[in-house]
Length: 353
Image (cartoon, rainbow, N blue to C red):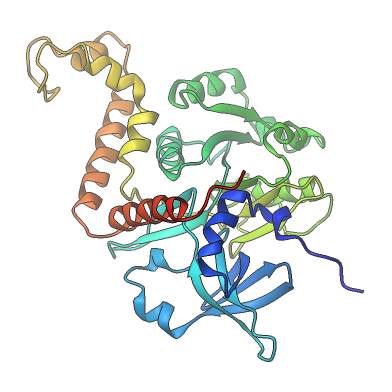
């Protein structure tokens, strides 16, 4: 006898149920993984491979229109066929987006409908504050809540110093420190996991994401390859996958990212660098360029050590990247369109008491 599946256990909240009522002829499902043009989905009917319909493909104007791991979609289960057919992607409540790797100016949806993003960084050779600032900015922009997870603390001789450094750039973000030799260290993540909630693990290859997920699962679900001779972990995850935890929460594992380009992350950058904005408010001139103007609070803060030059340069770099992305017709248009879709569908449906 097949186990009964309730898609509500996979985060299908009342918000999505209301949105799905617009498409009453189709069944709701969630994307668990993707392999090229095929998707593995789960619904109340079970698990099945699926592909988008021809009309869906024809009407899509950007790669961000296509389903991503974590999406809720409306499908034709296709009882007599091999694959289910995806007809609609429900509006996303959160969406982790990066610039696609390479020179092509295009957005890539890493995962969607996430509640918490674990930004993993090891405290040995992977340690990089500037990259962490980039991760935090994109995480805030996604609509999910970022949490910094510092792994392999046993390989760090200056732990207290590193935690202070991370705290200085992870403003308003929880920080969790985990040792690779402490078997119970993963339990520090439990407060962020609850039934119906989705978390995603984001980070470079080899920082220990798969190991942490295996601990949360209580089994060796994802392969891990230990360490190389230079203390860097080996790359293991090759695709994104949503996994249901015994606790009732869900995790999305993602491959390590060599590139994490900014794509329209203005709000996320402002939140990540809120300390710089507060300093800038003290400049004598409202249109201060923070270069040679008299009474520039930014330059004064750099000179007296209140603001590190490296953090200021990182802020300027990320601002420049997102300004370049703003000039392209892409994710911003799609995001605005989906926000309108959510508003329109909720207004259209009757309020249930």
